[in-house]
Image 1 (tube, rainbow, N blue to C red):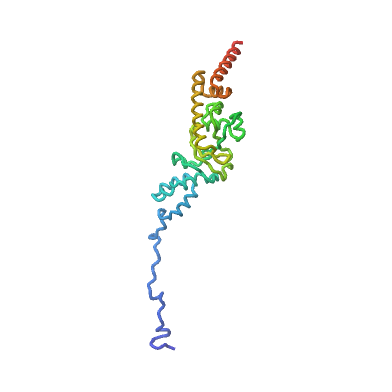
Image 2 (spheres, rainbow, N blue to C red; image 1 turned 60 degrees about the horizontal axis):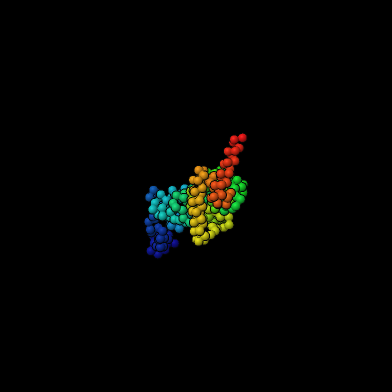
Length: 254
């Protein structure tokens, strides 16, 4: 049965919309470009860079201006620096951003406060490190160098001590190196006044050491030794040195 007004079955029914509109041609893969690296949202880019190693973050800074800005951010640099060792936080800013690029264990050190009776071999045994490593790390020519210092930087032998820790970026002028210092007691001790007093005392000690070294015509390590055994008395140090020298001459004459 034909419907009125039509020439055949179904003629006169509304034409489907999909048939009345020309369909869009399929996209040409060569003309469709994925999201450019420069178009990543800032938060997403930051999340990506947070997962990279320091060397890769440095490379990412060369991609474009946006990447350079994010890759140079203090939080991104710190995250890449501390992630390999599980450090929770790094306090302070290094003298140069190049500090962040090498996240090796050698960038970290443990702070040991020197106490009466301490020796380099004893400290080495305590922390399971080599004597030569302690001396090299602290720029010490001999074991006697310990007597003129308030603290030693101990190379990290067991990375697990850094897990969840807070480290402080410091320039150690004795060791002549900048490191992220871990304090077993949790944080650096002392306030501004005590630090100033310590600096003044250190200056006086250095002047005394120089005077004894010149008077005895010996190296710093020997002068430090004789000052240590005479509790810092320069006159007693020179007398002790003279007695030891006289004894050595007597032994050589026998």
